[in-house]
Amino acid sequence: MELKLSFKDYNEALKQNKLLGLRCKQCNAITVPPKIACGGCASTDMDIVQLSGKGSIQTFTTVFVPPEGREPEAPYIIVLVELDEGPWLMGNLVGVDPNKVTMEIVGKRVMMGHAVFPGDKYSAGEEARPVFSLEA
Amino acid sequence: MRKVAVVGVGMTKFSGKQDKTAVELFAEAAVDAINESGLKPANIQALFLGNALGDFAEGQAQLQAFVADYIGAPFIPANRYENACASSSAAFRDAFMWVASGFYDIVLVGGAETAAKMGTPLATRTFAMASDSRYEYPCGITFPGVFALLAHLYARKYNVPLEKLKYQMALVSVNSHYYGARNPKAQFQKEITVDDVLSSFMVCQPLQLYDCCPFSDGGSAVVLACEEKARKLTDKPVYVAGVGQASAGNLMSQKDYLPRLRSRELSAEQAYRMAGLTPKDIDVIELHDCFSIATLIALECLGFFEYGKSGEAVEKGETKVGGKIAVNPSGGLKSKGHPIGATGTAQVYEIVRQLRGECGERQVDGAKIGMTDTLGGDGGTLCNIILKRGW
Image 1 (tube, each protein chain N blue to C red):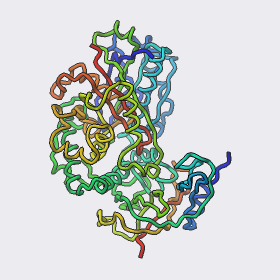
Image 2 (cartoon, helix red, strand yellow):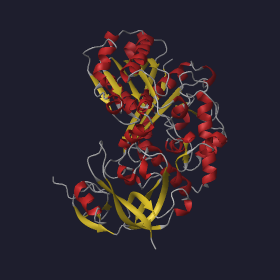
Image 3 (tube, each protein chain N blue to C red):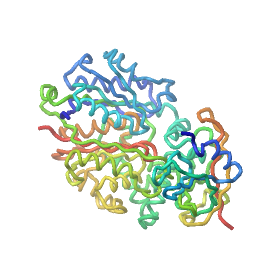
Image 4 (cartoon, one colour):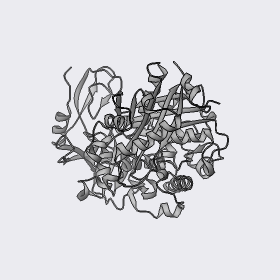
């Protein structure tokens, strides 16, 4: 069957700061990032929905030893955010000093923007990722 | 299903960067395992080989075919297993099933990796390929990064102050090095202190250098035989009592469970059920301590301690040889080393030798039942193997 929401379409939307997910018509669960089957009940009967991109930080780390090619970005913060719609999303966190971030950041409200990883010789091309910042 | 026994084991010394290729490292381990079993290469009916990153480390794909030829078993069916850090455990489980089914009587299983050869930047990049390339890697995730996220989640979920958790994690590394110092095959054969851990440089907050296993080169191999052949080959067959395997999607998709790894709970449950055993019956475990926090999470998912309580158990010495459950007497991934494709069958190597009573200073007295636990990716693959004395 044809994908309802491909990586390409999800990625293109993310580049416009739009977070797309899938709402299941059977169990109402939201699946993001997209899959061909609902993360809740495995139904393929889902509609594309735009999500708020808002949520709260569940955990974080600062990466000091980056992979090959990502050296100029380090140190950088990675967070797992629980979106207001329920799912968790991995992204970076900006506007906070990566050298000084502590457990205090957990639970803080954030909103989503994006940045683009231009890709490297191993990847399938350019890929956007969520970049969160603290809600004012 | 037929009973299946380990009749020979071999492993190279695990090390940092060295000159041998993955084919050569596996071959050294394989010849030791075959010799120990009293068999000849011509008796091996099939090869199951774990190797995750040969393509990147050496420009070598399909090394299983070259390995079979190189060790004197040309033309046998040979398959490669890529399950990230759990590659050779997944290979072991399949090898076991093929012998149990009656299709083969004698097979060779193992793994090899030359990860140290890549150097830290490329190794960090290629290890990160076991995360989700579309939805995780663009954020710059690394493997220490994954477990750093889990460490903070653990502290929060179980209400353990981070400072206390860091001390408990440091003790995990101290224990690993204590045993590694007593294992001639270990990459790091020196003891360390809590202060050494807490003063090492930060890799991914809150994980410091000594919270992390090294990149390593090495090989390991095991010969499996059906019961009938095993009884003729050895008076100390080590039987495969139970196996388990499970998978999981990216870290986000596991949100209902984290910091527990559901794939581990399911895999362990399969292995215990098949063996008719419970965690209380296990005398010794080699578990996947890729990072110090990973040990605490594993001990809980495997049923040895309550969720959130394994750090206290480590503080009380319950994970040492002679404690409630002997954990990683080989030195574990942290100190013995972690050549990822070789890790699973190197864990089997240690358990088999523990059950045979061959481990000298780090021997778990009277060990009769042992278990392995191997994790690939951010819970993407989990394998467990339970081994039992056959005498």
